[in-house]
Image (cartoon, rainbow, N blue to C red; front, top):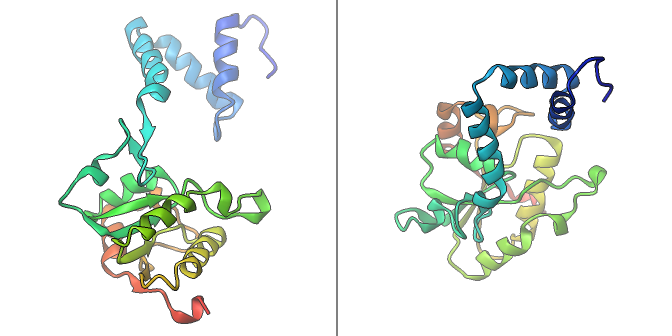
Length: 207
């Protein structure tokens, strides 16, 4: 990044680091950096401490792949959840969004979606761990909650074919989720309705 004349090196370095994040351009990075400069020293130190702990204290659940502070998340450890019903999502943040809809089952996070154009094949997603869960024989239903995009639909198709002969019911969240929509931006009513009105995966989709 081109540094403005007279910009102190620490400020220029912060702007450069912030602008490296997805969705944050140089101008936004500059505004964020200047805003931090205006904050109290204690607030900035608190932010720095949060960033320092981000990778050491935020983990992913060994079972479902969702956010966790230890080896397992609170959903997988909750004996009151319906663990025989598994909602398959793309990213850990999707779990947070679906929890607003009062879903009582469990989850499986793929950490992405199939995208041949981007070189993302099945081997780069968490399908092996899903295979292991299904092999355990306790799962009765898979709910496809991948995004309503071309790649999201392709991922759902792949999963339905992969487990078509395991005697597991495969359903898709209802179209309360708009085409091209991401779960992150939906309200809790839409999410709850989509889960409640999920539909069975049609046989012609897996033929």
